[in-house]
Amino acid sequence: MAENALMHDRLLPRLLQDLELTPHMLTYGDGTTGSNSLKSAMSAFLTSSRGPSLILAKHFFLASRIFAPLSRHLVAECMSIQQPRFRFGEVDPFGPAAVSKYEEALLEARKSGQKVVGLILCNPHNSLGRCYPRETIIGLMKLCQKYQIHLVSGEIYALSVWGPGEPFYSCLSVETMGIIDPSLVHIVWGTSEGFGASGLRVGAVVSQHNPDLHAAICFSSIHSSAASIAEASVANILRNVPWVDAYIEENHLRLSKHFSLVMKWARSKEVPVAPGSNAAFFVWVALGRAYQVHHAEVTAEYTCTLLSEALSRQTVVLAAGEQFGAEQQAWFRLVNSLSLQDLDEGLQRSSLVLES
Image 1 (cartoon, rainbow, N blue to C red):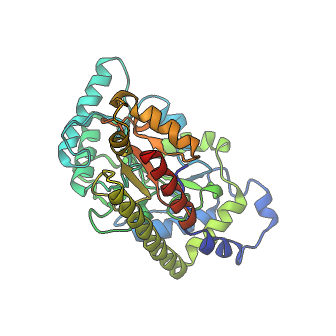
Image 2 (tube, rainbow, N blue to C red):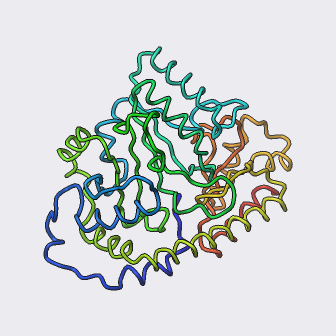
Image 3 (cartoon, rainbow, N blue to C red):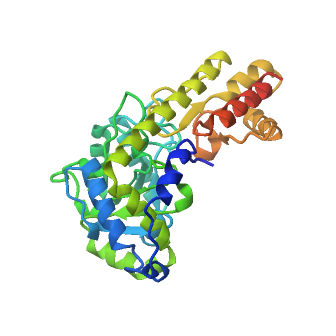
């Protein structure tokens, strides 16, 4: 599972601090689209970090699963998913030139009879740990405007940009005038990754200029509403700005340290690593290539299958690249946000698999 366990020692005491339970929390509260208290706290937090446009409480839908509110209204038709689902060949999937690849895929889908209603990005990216340049985001906005489709930006890793390189740009930080109808732009965000709290199951959809979408989601939101106590816990955290700032900084330090540990291990085992990662908690590693060095009898066609089985026997679970539509064989997604003990043990067991 892709989750961040590095900050549990800091987060748990804070969650238990100053949490006052009330009878109101045992009801449907302020409605099925989320509590007013958390909407207010999130609007202040995201406005300060996304800018320049003001994000108001009325722009939010809160849910236990961040894509649930949209899935019944947009994803139910046909949404284009970003790299590595598409084939980009030699084109950098994060560069401006990649926009033409999205357009090719969109036109091909329409040609086959599919109705494409939107494009979903994950920025920063799961599983490559990279951020989309501002120029690319604007290019994708113009593409969505051209074909009148929605742009949904999944920004759940936005607080996990731990290293130098391409900075994170939110879709909400772009002045849309002359680029895209703002009613087509939406983001999703939650506490699961940036705060290392996937068990709280509190997420949000932010849509600033689409009242029709708001009305549609309100009608069906009872099926995905978040728990009142979880909402209260998150609101308490977000209102304490100095604590949040210190928490995010420490999270960055720990993520950077664990990434460095994985890179050191990869170099020692001559495992190729995809360049450019500076966000989230993934390392895109070509384990299959290192495996073939010690298992010359294994053909490329079967490397991923045999390697996955061998890792499983060591109780090591890595997501194979083919699960993400990787264009090249033998790549795996390694999650480095485990405890130091678990990460070290996992790397040692992976070494045994590669070399045995």
